[in-house]
Length: 355
Image (cartoon, rainbow, N blue to C red; front, side, top):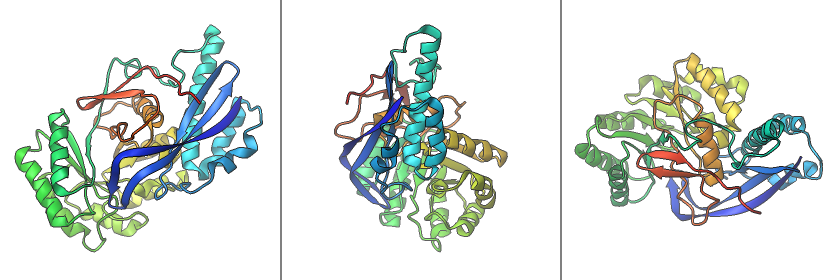
């Protein structure tokens, strides 16, 4: 088998704004594994301001291996070598899972499946069931955010996630209050995501103010890598805290220490930023030991990465909405493999993209 890489630039329909800034376009890469009988790929979709390998030249990383005929074991060995490149490793891991499925098909039926990007077989990937997701409200002016929230609610979403921390705090409170006055917590669950936008010395006061609105959870109130302060916020917060950016760059051996020290209510798993589904499985296993719950979100991947994350998530018995509704952000995307209907995302029979 051979591995190759190709680059695509995804342009946003409208700027995707967070408290860290906004995205106009972003690069993404397809890592291909080519066998004489099949061709599969995984998507490496780095975020320059978040991914550890966001500014790494992936073509240079891949170049020593591109002309080599590799066995499956060789590819699996690369997973260990590429732990310092989480985004690229995510793509490789997904591609390997698809290659394993194809190899199994060849061995058992002497034929390949007609769904080359499928590596999980269950009710979701057979398009018999959907996954519940939250409706995401991006940063914008307050009026536009309100209108987007109402549009999501009218579309059927019972869980709305609102990005906060970049605008005037009083205005953000009035926005949330307006929504909550119209929709009580039994009808609409509200999640907030600060993306590290609160100042450490103001965070608890702001959280106390926000708690008046029956908030389900608040993601990453302050910037990551301040474990003592984050631990204090988790202990004193009147809203359940979820860690997001805090997980990025944490070695597997350090996961128990971080979870025990900070003790959040939830963790948010972004497989692209964490390095692959196996590493996310480790986070889940460790979190369960501390009674910490989780959900997964996409991280501005194209349709291929989004569908892969949805496949992986579908293996778990889920109790909370996932954050997998970012497939319609781009002007031109890869072949659509999922579709959102109401507040659920469904899997479609994917077609492999062409070079």
